[in-house]
Image (cartoon, rainbow, N blue to C red; front, side, top):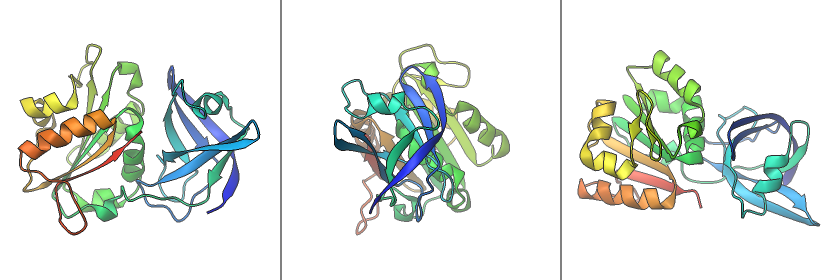
Length: 246
């Protein structure tokens, strides 16, 4: 791998501490769900962090980022504006991809916060639409303003409503129309998530990908385990896979 200097060509502020950055660098080869290292030269040292790509293969690199006040990189990165440069690795890494998902009828994508990023990359590509009969994307956030990409996701619902369901979840504010209020583990346990999606979450025909807060992932995998669902491993096919975001 080697570093490539890349210019910021787009920056969108969704809410305080939540942005999308678009870079002119195109990472190839790249499989949706993978990540790359992004870096800045700070005080004579290159500081880097891994971020999942939210863009599809062949497109300029896009990242969905949250500000970590204690983070050495995120504060100066959030200050960067279009036209300014950052460093990016020229090779994507990681196994949180559809290549490692066993055959299933239905695919559930459960994300919290910026864990939405790799799922956007998958949904912007073609394989996911060809493989699964139903796709349910669940995006859990604390506040309504943190529901980034909601317009894009709603457009996919309009275009692919028989195949794609988008369920926004808000935990610390009143949920808007069409959204659920609460936390993902409780919404699975109560059946509210399945009722909203109009689809059963069952080991016989479902696979679940989880990405985001490790606490959410731990709680949700425990709930799925109670339903007889097991972690997927290469030598022992299962029903869920996950990627923790810190």
